[in-house]
Length: 386
Figure (cartoon, rainbow, N blue to C red):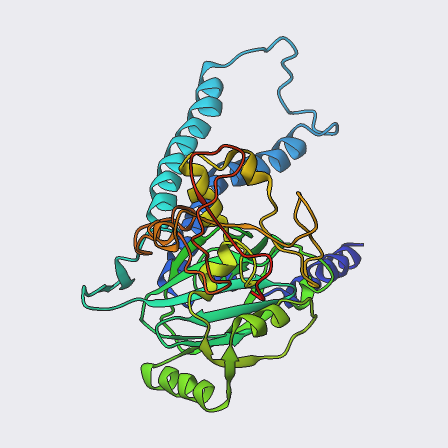
């Protein structure tokens, strides 16, 4: 009987042999700190769990029915020493765990720029972080390198020991960007921008993935992360320049169509402000950017004039103006110069508070008051080809 139980226990543990303990094998400093925090919290909780498990077995054995020598005290109901241990030890563990978790999670805030490369190397002030703009699509990942004017689908290359700043958004469905060996997981959401800082300290090929169910192709929504030295990264970029096509707005809209197990595709050249246009939901040339709508609202709105549809009727959108069949939309307040006056610098400003540069239809500065509104409006000419 004992041999049979031993065999059954071995068979029960056997499936665990296929588990990849990637969280405990970090390749970057941020992931290493997260791993240390996880291990510390686990060991601290085991201070209670292990004694409880041992005492459970000990009590069951000592006070078994056949042990006539065990003390029998049916009237016992209280022990100050036991109460002190039962309450004090968990309370101390919670205090320590709470303090360590609070400090650790704030120190590892994904929006917080890195202060070091690894445990032994502080980050030099003259080191420029690598910027990577990430867009989650159905069901693939797009990585844009604005400093190099290149992009890649389903492959992410990073130089080792160089901090990376990820700016992330989603085309449609909410998703999560996860490279467990480098840094924590963070959400991507349409119309919003999130930030993640990380670094890789060891060369190799790692796996990135989506950790949030997003539909049919979720299980294939994975990508390779290539960690290489500076020379290898430069060669990777040069390879894109030799083979990639340009990622314009039309190419992006085609790429955004749902696809499963999408191949790796390089792009040499990226449309101006493409990431900002994706965040502002206005990659289509005829669509008003979300940031423009917000800026107009911040100026007091357009009143009844704002009811005019903001997207002209096209074969792609299938929408039409609210008042009348003519395809028209509110383009700007007053003149194009006034509208673009809302443009602020990207650095230090959340995307929701800035204009994304538009490269769609020309703005017409014809001043026409609508419904008695004192603010003149610019409107696209319904008879024009644009």
